[in-house]
Length: 181
Image 1 (cartoon, rainbow, N blue to C red):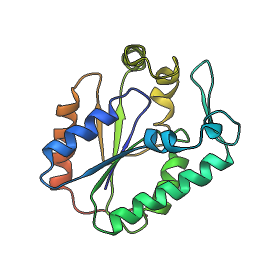
Image 2: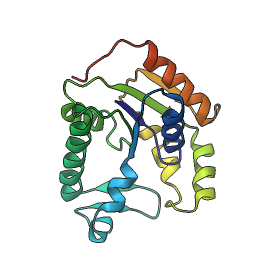
Image 3: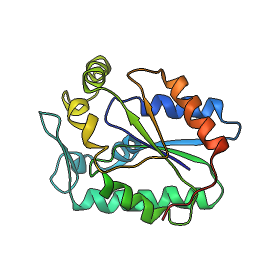
């Protein structure tokens, strides 16, 4: 399993698609955006779900966390059943978010990847996309990496998604199989 952590518009989804192309085995790409998209609309607006403030701040409530924990357990179950998975996530809680993933992934081989991107570059991508609350990219650029350690880090402000995927794929090919703790 590969877990990509980076802020909004940092390039995680593009890297995940490129990893699917460069890794010799079949890998599923699963993103937190998919989880949000399949939630009931009321959880995308209410305090118990996920909220998007006008300044780009994102808040999550208890019901969102409950569904997110179930989603994490489901992703882990797919990996335990033999699927190779690249997860594209945004660790709003920094190290606490990783701890939640580690709990779900206990005993599985995981490569932890930090996807960094300069806040100004990410903000420009966010504007070009037009499907994000303006300000999320800048707010999240450093926030998601606080207290984090990674097996490998890439910077999409200085390298294209394909280059980043090659760096990660090389690490996956050479790395001993580490398990989450």
